[in-house]
Image 1 (cartoon, rainbow, N blue to C red):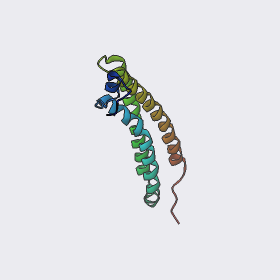
Image 2 (image 1 turned 90 degrees about the horizontal axis):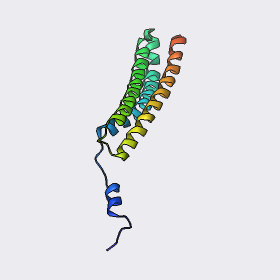
Image 3 (image 1 turned 45 degrees about the horizontal axis):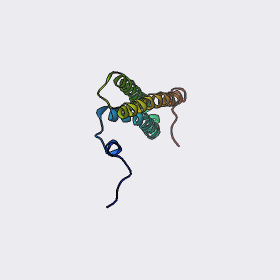
Image 4 (image 1 turned 135 degrees about the horizontal axis):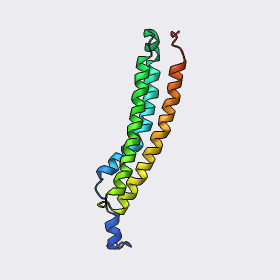
Length: 133
């Protein structure tokens, strides 16, 4: 029989724990901004020729707005996670640290990708629609 070098307390701490709702929401806050930016880039690129045929940028504006709102929602989720960490005494120290880290990363990622989407929106606003070859 192989004996472990871990104490019983270390074994208990290393054992898998159920994932809390706050950890899931904080993870969504981290992942939503880059996903919304990538979808924005892909969908907008695919809609350029149909928008040029219709001579209307409404669909492109809608895609940009939706991506911006999704990234903004991620920032809000991050701030809510930070608020829960400060007020919730039922969380373990490890869970509190994970939620705090993921919430801060979600806020930073959301802010960065809001700026990236805004930069892409400038192109949509300024360049004219022309027919494709």
